[in-house]
Image 1 (cartoon, one colour):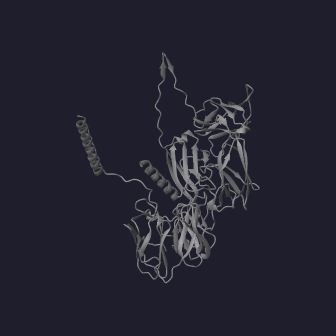
Image 2 (image 1 turned 30 degrees about the vertical axis):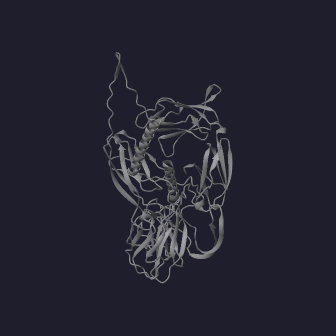
Image 3 (image 1 turned 90 degrees about the vertical axis):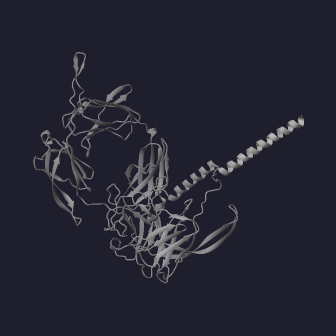
Length: 633
């Protein structure tokens, strides 16, 4: 009986196991698995051959085929692939499988070295690993020109690396070559602003940067960004020694071998890119968005205001004029109600205009200014409360009050109204200081803003940590068009001295007038002070992180000025303080700074740069892919 029971039980177990194994086998055959494991392939494609061969001499073929050891693709070929000498007709570049085919449509020049610079456009098909700095060269003559010139292009005002700008050489040393002739040799900058021009013959050259928007390899449009070097470029080379290291493993060195190699110079040309001032002066537009105001917009700054003559009205004393700092935007507020109620105002406008010879000449325009109809507010009926009628609230003159509850020691109070002020009662404006528990009336200085006539500023030398109260009685200000201001009352406290810090710069390496700008970590200008006897001081700073930018202000106008190729004038020099300063409350930092101690491309902090290197983005993407794979595993 026991034997029979054991036999039955064993038979049942064998049957269950057999079914389980059959199900498992069926599932493993039927399911589609996704293989995981192992690191992502980081090996770039490898060049294995071409037709014609790399470095071919006396070549006449215009069709070039380049082969690799794996399937490849081209990324942004129009931006990254550059052919020297530059091609007037754009060549056809076609990737396919493991090959790239290039069809040159221009005629081949005799005795010329041709370079097809792919930069990092060639990547493998699966993981996108780039074959960096790959260039293919051949010659239509009996020699290959091998000289190289390298450097970097930076924005002149911000020292930002300029990505994708064309850099070219001219063997024709006439100034007009940049404007009339295409470059002899070209390259394009990478994401760090770096460039390498290859295949250069011995000689003397001018070097230029050009944002070639019309792709004709000449500076033909004033709107194109450009850069030029004051000195001639003379390519040369020298033999140098370098040490090549072979490793047994990641920690153990096998051998170190010294080898001769050819080093090409100059290898660090710095070009500062800028756009010329579009100085053409003309009237962009005029508008009369409200019956009471006329606005004129001009294309460029001007030293003087235009003159207006009324054709259907008397213009004398008819306007209150508000203008921008450089007279390129001008508002005319119409005083007389009989005048601004006219549907159309005819005006003769006299101003300076840039003619076809780029000369400023007098010009006269006749303007018909039609008022844009304002939306009429619905008539409000008086509301009844019980048996009594309740009047609608009085409409007051709109005003924006600047009197922060926590006032900086250097700040001031301001009132900005929506329309010009006809009159005001200074006795209806009060400033009081809290002394113990009482409010004491104190004097202040009231001034109309020099540019914005609708703005009034109130000045007083605040005391640290004191409490103040600013108030304006009702109807203290009367607007040009009949509205009065409402009452205003604002209390505030001035910050204590211990809440601030200060930074003092001792500057060297300067040979001209300059000003220093204090920057936050977003490259935004917070303060600007002139450099006096090699010093620039910033007081009353909030705790935080700062850096600085210095501008050589040669014309002493307080702003950075761009350059001009026609005048052979470089943009004003800019330098960045190469460190980040962390300021704490009640601290004073004193910094010595030689502005020329570092080359320009090493000065600006990476945290400030908006143009980030492409390889950093690719590395981040690859790390994300590895992390995703690790999570799946």
